[in-house]
Image (cartoon, rainbow, N blue to C red; front, top):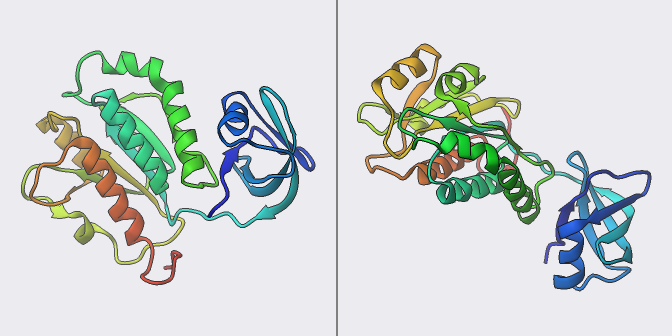
Length: 248
């Protein structure tokens, strides 16, 4: 069974500590004791560490060794239009598990009114969800969860390969739209629409900004389903069969 992994603020020399909710979870739920071993990550490297002291709101560790840290096969950004927050948060959790590097909420024309303002108050909650999901999925780095932006800024700010998930007929399947040569340094962005779909103006703006319209199939998917399905396709497309790593 894999060891539990926790993110810490810093590793100083050979010492680190967990505080607050994570420390209480270790003490109360996992029944942590001195001498037990866990994995710690400082958002750069992964370490094997041994518990030194367990206190009420603090657990201290001694670093034993640095461990190999797996990296996603590409740098992937999810631009997800604002949808009902329970569904948005489900998509955020799953995107984190899959290895997305950046999540950007997008205020699209057909996003429900008021969601962008409400999203400002949710940002810290969303970052906590990403933290917990990163620990569960044993990531080495936390995803960047950014404040919500207008559609125009989202469409104009992305870099690298850009894929615009389209629900109307005529778009190429996502797999067919991928370039034949792919490298681990590639930056890829996927833009997912709201529950009401894209407007013609948004389609035109995305086309001018260089986004490729693509489809995930003939069925109409919920936004959160489309986001996770699109990410899974992209991430696996960058991993050659049987190798477990990305190559040109």
